[in-house]
Image (cartoon, rainbow, N blue to C red; front, side):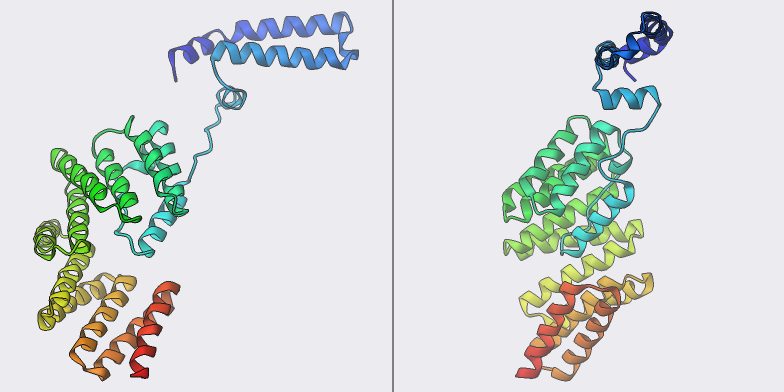
Length: 313
């Protein structure tokens, strides 16, 4: 609450006396029979209160009745959108403490998240930059990561890389290991997308070491899968299979069904490159069954296409 609001709270009884005196005049002179005077009176009172507090009328009512303003998004909405973004194939969004941040940070962050949900990347970036103005500590790590993701999706990889590197620098500054692993992993994905597999591998190996030290099994499994993918691109199928099988084991241990199915599909693709059709179909079918269980429509279509292509050979 600002000093101006605090001063108004202290003098609320003065305003009440003024309002009661005006109301007395209405009754004494029988002005209440003239409806336009009543409307003028109500407008006058609201105008005085708004002028004294410097607030809009909706905000004024919230202050008077001690009502909390409705958030742009609830915590449940934020989690739902974050899960949806990950479901679309993005890296897991790093929220840090943004859902619990002060209003000046949380509101523009939530608006940015809504814009991402609607594929409005530049609009989302504008909201996240607004949130940066009042954000502090590890919130900055998360916000730069979101800005990087927004540049990444329309293919602006250099801009994405700049923001992921800024996120990494801040994560190191604030000793934020989780934010650090997210930033390093995203940098690795950028280099992988740009075809620089050696750099990508270096970053993924760094993430793997940190996540194992932290005991973060979910990110460890994802990183093993990323390393396996690089080996598959290079044609080292046996080593690719080894890393994917390690990832599969962890995903099953922690009950991460979506990632388990994704790894099964990737193993199927490895056997496709090996020319082992029976094993390829077996892994595709396992992946398809899980995707159907969790209702992953996009992934179901993808695996069904793989199975159809295999059967048409």
